[in-house]
Amino acid sequence: MSQEKKQFIKDSENIAFDKRHRATIKFNISKYDAAVDRGRKRYANLELAKDRASYIKSDAIVKLPQYLLEFEKNSQANGAEVIWAEDAAEAIQSVQRILKDNQANLLVKSKSMTTEEIELNEHVEAIGVESLETDLGEYIVQIAGEKPYHIVTPAMHKSKEDISELFHEKFDTPEKSTPQYLTNFVRGLLREKFTQADIGVTGANFLIADKGAIALTENEGNAMMTFSFPKIHIVIAGIEKVIPKMKDLGLMWPLLAAHGTGQQITVYNSIVSGPKRSAEADGPEKMYVILLDNRRSELYEKDDQFEALKCIRCGACLNACPIYKNVGGYTYDATYSGPIGSIITPFYKGFSEYNHLSSACSVCGKCTEVCPVRIPLHNMLLYNRRDAVRNGDTPMGWNLGMKAFEYAFMKRKRLDLLGGNMKNKLGKVKKDALGDKKSLPTFAKESFSKQWKNKH
Image 1: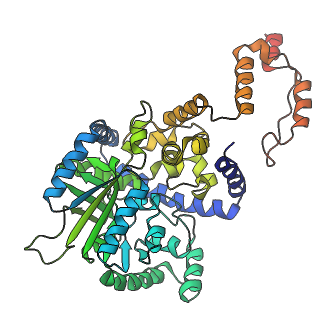
Image 2: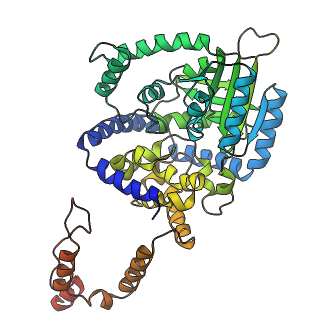
Image 3: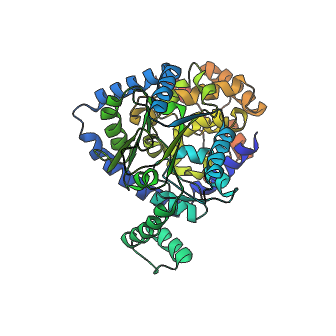
């Protein structure tokens, strides 16, 4: 058993019975559920929209090399510099080089899970450059010394009381400050930082191949200021973010908003095609687009799991997942949590070490049901489990247990070999078989099949 799996089991056992944590997550996800339910009902035919979005992303992934080269060509024609990064180390080296070449002291960044994946903040600060999150949720977890808890809602695990207490501790704001007060307080702090920043870093919700542009969608306007105020704009995006055409945004943006926050469309939507032109007064003087592989190509080569690259990071599968709701985001020990994280993390961080995440699933299929681009998520979790067995990554005890299970359940007679009395005696030997919060049931003396035969 890997050390990561041992830690997962320990952490999940602890957090699953933390009543305060469960109450906070239940409340926050209930707000999400209500909003998203309204958002989905705005569609006259949501299933058709999902079919079309799935087709667009499937086309983009199947022809990924072609669309990436098209994006590179058009982006360079727009004046941006495109950098290919095979892994996190190459991406970090490129960013550090840009910072040093431009003698940068302050970097502001908008919300981006890709930058979390490569741990950008830590590596930037290692060379003496301040890196500041500008999304409110990301800013909250940054000053708390934490990582994002959720793909879309970084501070979902915190109540308004938790945040008020945090700001009082860090900035001496009034105790029990309201969310409105704290939002205005942060807005004042960040506005000054935007005007001072040398570098702005964003991710990309989509890479538009036919325009060589990036698309960003947000609710706070911080991403727009991140690429507008500083003289240099760095984009860090996974290679799977590409879509074929500009017109695809008319479908993809509203669908992402509906499943991510329940909105018809988010408040700020930007298309950035390069640095400012000679006739333009505003905008960055330089723009770099770092296309990150970081083992996505390995996932791309999988016959059964490659479709996971269709994900548009809406977070719907996390909010629907009964496991995520119980163990929370931090238990996964990964940038991407929930069902989608359980599929892709083993490929990104090491299959032998992280394949256990694919077993953190009840196979209820709710994740597949809510996915806006129709990724068969629960099937892929099963494929990962299959591959873990084929690779020899599962414990011998587990494998022997599954063989015994298979043998017993192949025939009814085998199941009935042990009567109820023997089963009850075995249960007393292993009282904690279902954990220390549940107890094994008491078995009847005769199995159901025998009782049925006797009765009929």
